[in-house]
Length: 227
Image (cartoon, rainbow, N blue to C red; front, side, top):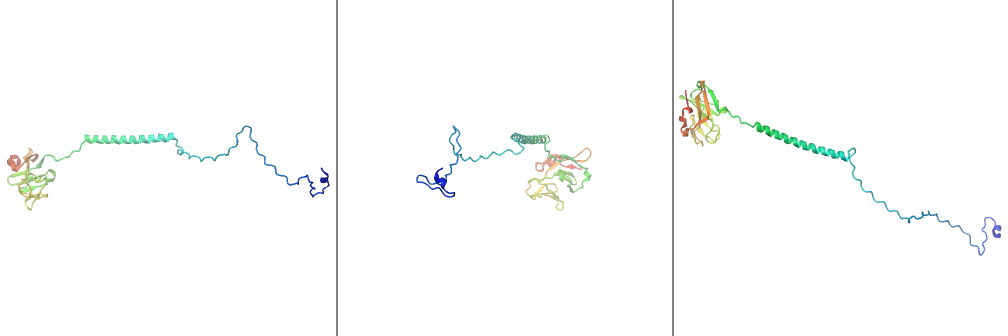
């Protein structure tokens, strides 16, 4: 220590000589830097991390991919079996209809109408009109069976007792009690069915045999029953 420093009273700065630098606040030492490891590459500024890609939709909870595939297969198999069963059912129905075809039940072509005494002379009996399509007429000489079909277009004529004639409701054709046409568009008389007596004495009507007046067939003994 120099003499000047020793002689300086406390609290006062030591006199500075011409060759002594002025005292000042000591500079702060630089912060220590971490030493790089031997052989390490120079530090590189970290790049900004890329945005994460959206994750694929996960399978529903409790259902693995294998289970979903199995269920889809079973569903497709069920649809196929249903279609197969429906096809088999349709085939069975078609076969049944083939084995039991629709049959149009028609009234029998022959029937017994009762005894001649059951019919009144001078009347037209209509009891077999709806069921068999037949008018039974009795006169003083006997009986005949008129076919209840108009000879114009096939409508069913009605017997009008008050007017003593058959009248077709479709186009107005008119026929006498004998079946002869006299008005309207009907081109010919009503036809007759075969009428005979059966072995038991009853009247038998046979619709398989038809007699037309314009052909001269009313003269046949089977077109008129004498009683």
